[in-house]
Image (cartoon, rainbow, N blue to C red; front, side):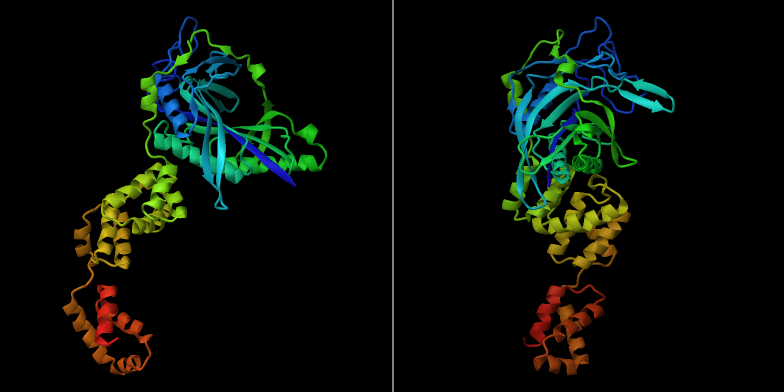
Length: 477
């Protein structure tokens, strides 16, 4: 039996308006090489100037994960030669990062809460992008020098599921902090996965293999599972030392396989040394005070929703997984929806319809205030649950948003007037005198029959709660 050991290096593009060492914009999808200047092109004589906002955002992340934020940190030059790195080195932090020794917690499938250590989070400049078209390769340097926060975990994860849970929690945190859009399709949240295996009970780590630049939760899971299986097979076949070695591999999404890319460099290969053009970063008390002003994060929301609102933890984890989902939920409550009812209508009714339509919560045709008002009308007896579902279906397809006007228009208003209901009830009882006798003789299941007849006679508009109450009074029970 083997144990899997996983550590992740996550690269988060910070959502500053300009690059980390120059004033070029960081806007996405511009014409190739438009957002460049002598600094990010690494031209002789051009000097970098550090973006203060990038430092501030990195500090906010540090405080959000209970880390140490160093008052003094250093930028180094990390030497490597790739076409998308115009300087032939990357400006990055090495021995003294801005953030170190943090943690976050994941909720495992077994219902356990597990701590994952964060070794460090350091600032660096992103590389450009290589574009391969047939036999021709091109380089787009718009992305070069975009500010990156590289977040390095401890090797604390033991399965692909735990790795994905860690990534999702990290993704949520940077989105709640608003330090990155964390758009995985655009590459602003991507990760390198370090995987090894060892016999269960062994304290010694196996040979670590790095899988480079994965930008999908699903692909992270698949890449880990393939690589673990490859390493176990090599061990069992007696070829582990020959087939598993310290290297960088790529994950081929078409074949579902990892394949060798290059030997994995050690830190000495990068020839780190302090960047002579950048002085040490010294953060001020004012910067620290500003960075500590962080919003309510997922874990804090989980605690508040469960303890104050009385919501089940499994429901809360769904709601708080996305910043937009939590904001939608809270807006529903502000619009008058009770906390528990809002959970059901958000996670079951609305999300079910959105999933069917292929939409995210932020793309919902029905806004939170409108759905909150619909639920409020259920609570005050204006409409039934069935009527509310009909109303929600209508709102998904139409732009009208006046809930009360739509209730009238669609004929969904419940009949709750005692006099009108008693008229219908008396007619039903008179027409079914034999069943009334059976009910009074002890056949109490017939109450459901009477309720059904009243609902049918009222064409579904009768308030079921009122119907039950009035029937029991008329039947003398």
